[in-house]
Image 1 (cartoon, one colour):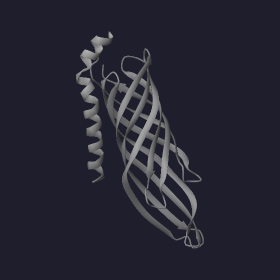
Image 2 (cartoon, one colour):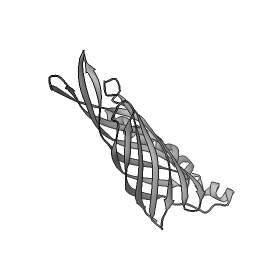
Image 3 (cartoon, helix red, strand yellow):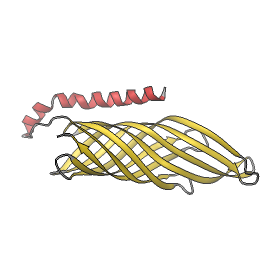
Image 4 (tube, one colour):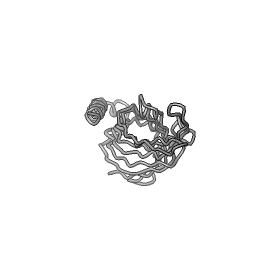
Length: 203
């Protein structure tokens, strides 16, 4: 069910971006711009994530991603992000507990590119993430541990920039936020990830 919701979001993003792409030739001629053809890319990034509702909420994180730049100003992207394991102190009734969460998820998003100077673009993205959480709660007094797993779909937004190193290699830095991961549970949190990555594109 969550996967179906995610594919619908990606499909709508693709449709919205493909519409102006079909008119790209007229737009380019009207503004004196050179023509643009669709390119495909794939890469990976590493960095750190912060889960706002956790005292020890910052940890290493990473992602793999791929997509299509359909025209000069837009495209679509799919990927998988791993946020890492974090922990916080909580209560189970009146008993103090240590709560831990390990989260990650697949995402789909529409991407907007804003060319600034040759080889350098600003990036914005919006879409959805199909996330999963492996959670545990350990009572500090008795050392009894309860484990649960949660999953759901949440909004995803991001901004960043990329620089073209050569004909088909790009350096990208970005910030992304997945909202309300673990919604309606004791482990609900927004997750921010900052990462630096490399990706390779077709010519």
